[in-house]
Amino acid sequence: MKIEKITPFLVDRFLLVRVYTDQGLVGNGEAGLWAHHGVVHRAILELSDYFVGKDAARIEHHYQTVSRDAHFMGAALSAALSAIDIALWDIAGQAVGQPVHQLLGGRVRDKIKVFANVGGATVAECAASAQQQVAAGYISLRMSPFLPGFERKTPSQVVGEAVAMVAAVRDAVGFNIDLGLEIHRNLRPEEAIILARELLPFRILYYEDPLAPESLESMEYIAKTAPLPMATGERFYNIFQFKDLIDRKIVSLIRPDLSLAGGFTQVKKIAAIAESAFVGIFPHLMGSPVNIAAFCQLDAAVPNYVLMESHPTADAFNDIVDTPVERQGGYFVVSDRPGIGLHIDEGKLDNYPYQPKKILGNYHADGSVAH
Image 1 (spheres, rainbow, N blue to C red):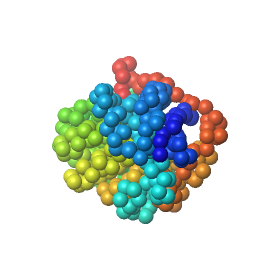
Image 2: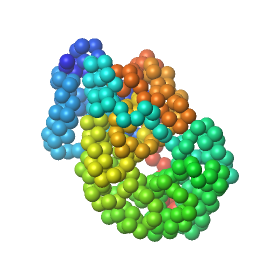
Image 3: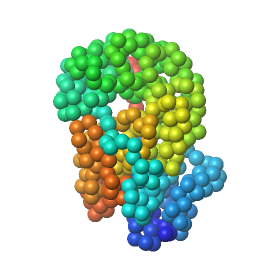
């Protein structure tokens, strides 16, 4: 079965890809470098020059060829290759009438536990949001403990407000609901350490991305100093970065993005490296219903999967696919349909014009860049 054509689609805030074969099977995938989809779109077009005419089944071989041919890699190329890889696995599943999770060794769970995000612009709103999510069936919550405009406040004020927000949420839902914190790379090392120590009484499941991801040395310092389990890795784009992260014993949970870190071909390997170190898989999920379907196939087959985002904002785009993933309270249901379990309806894509991300900046009170 030969690859005949690869077409990327810029849709709203997503970058979808379809891989067409000479036997009529069409694979569906998605790229995850959400801030720079225009660049990745061009990369997919360039990579298609290699893929067209090749055997669609030689997925690992193609990944090795493309990633090692000139040893120029990075987030844009990895996102492009990830989208194509997901689509090729989708084709492989369709070709044998099996879901991708079956090709990865079979499912190890029947449903996928997900978390809900806590929202709100005040402490009271955050507490109310947490209660609403628990009432909807979620047993795991995540919150970003910063009020609007925190960038222009003093570190002491930011820490104080964060502690008050977490305390209010814990008071609202109790201690039997899992609670993680998304720091969004917003803190300096000293701020991250102080905040982590003050949050210790609130039974925090994970402390996600307290620092910008560029320096593993700084992350290592935080991990050894702050008394909360660390989660990071959503900006990483290859297996070597994750191995370094795991080997340094920085994290309890890693955050590979299937649509950025190499698709099924590479993320299954990343998960195995993490499994050998008792590190959990906490996938970073953004994008459309296509990504949700692909991620669920991975999650179903990974023993050390822990959690991922419910991502309900993607539901507004369910009409671009034939069979969106089913939700049941705080879980996704694992699809047994062939491939990733759905197909893109190209006729609906024009209803959602491309919405590129604009660079706006976030600034401290003194005008310097905050994050």
